[in-house]
Length: 600
Ligand SMILES: Nc1ncnc2c1ncn2[C@@H]1O[C@H](COP(=O)(O)OP(=O)(O)OP(=O)(O)O)[C@@H](O)[C@H]1O
Image (cartoon, rainbow, N blue to C red):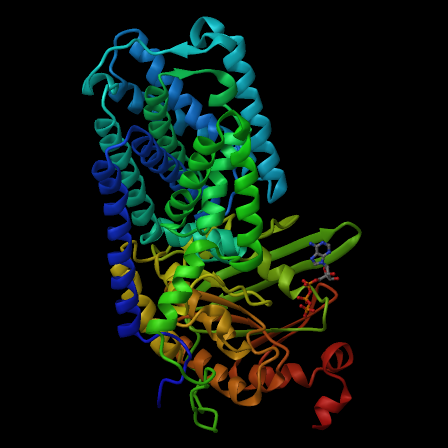
């Protein structure tokens, strides 16, 4: 079998990474060395400003890019850091201590205000962050005894490293550059470890991430706290660098937008995009201001807007997208469209094993949507190593039942119990609890994390058992091998065919090493050879000791796989038993199969 994907091969990927790392190291070196060589006050100022904005935007990107939460209130944390630094300096405490105090306060504030806001999505989240920013600005104006009110606060002119105030520009550049590198390192670490994968998965498909055992609220809170702490630290330094702060500039919406803009232009959700955004935009606006003087007030807004429009039109993935394309064109291998893997034409025959002990008990589940009684007293038991087929006409309530037995939906009444690895019975209530007990699920409409490769998609599931990235990667590769996805490991998930996507959906759950697998129509919309492959796959999964409940309309699969079949119609169990007995039941023929099926 040959690898016929159109994706970069591992060697090409490594070469691309090395070339990227060298380019970034060269850029960072240039940012530090250029002002030192030119040795001009204004040039120093530009490069210090680049470092400050690159740092702030990189910190913002942890929430806005990785987690996809468009915060327009990040100046709250910047302001907290700036005020903490200057207020403590005024009472004789070094801003180095103020920096950590501000970071701690900002992290706590971020967690408290984000918890309710994360319930809001899209523009509503952005609006809530703007509203909170306004609250902080008004508070800073109101408590003038602490903040100096509208007149602001000056720093006492204590010169030296201890006070972060210098006559020369070089020490300020060293601090700004060091902090920017630190923030970049934190962002890189997050993106390449479990937290980063989970954040991107949450951004891409929250339901799928939850099914993979990701605590989506927890990881976002963690991300926003880290981002806020880093923003506050840079805020402290910037406050000391400017030697003066006041509420209008410290808690400014325009400033928040500016931070976000660097990331948008540089490449949202990439580690180095915000740095590229700052490198492009800061000199552009600073030189324009320098050249035009007072006539250029507000010019930076115009420049940012114009560049943003150009980026959106020509390079929607930002500057990093452009850089990525450039590297890919030099290192990628070419090939044909993804080819399917050959499989034997015959379906494997099997002898059903004796059913084991009970592993899941569902009793009297009822669910109403308004006046619609979607599941009516549904009860069944799943045994270890059993494949249970769940069939019924469209709208019978099968997916609703799945949602209740995986924690995505609360039942109006009834119970779902799962036997844990400890041998005790548990009553889980949310997807994370179900995942912990070993219950994994797929979705009827496939939910790939489109911005990730096949390998990374599967790793999101593997992280559930293997917190370390190397272990998760190894587990993902093992799972991909079993699922026939090994040749596509480095392909973008979105490039797979529907059959491939369905297998990816199963692979992600299998990487969680589940004990109970809930499969929602994994064979819908796939061709005959894929159906045969899927049947083989399900049998090999069961051979590993996994119990399966499969919603399925493909009767060929239901008949050849299921040990036990349940038929749901209008929310009620109308028949259950061995497949052969069930399909001959007149009620099932009437409600679901039709007479043609029996004749066939
Ligand atoms: N969130 C919801 N709010 C209101 N009604 C809903 C909701 N979810 C499902 N329903 C309705 O509940 C009924 C059962 O839907 P469900 O998706 O569980 O059926 P199904 O058996 O899985 O159907 P299919 O085979 O077409 O997927 C349908 O009439 C559907 O329109």
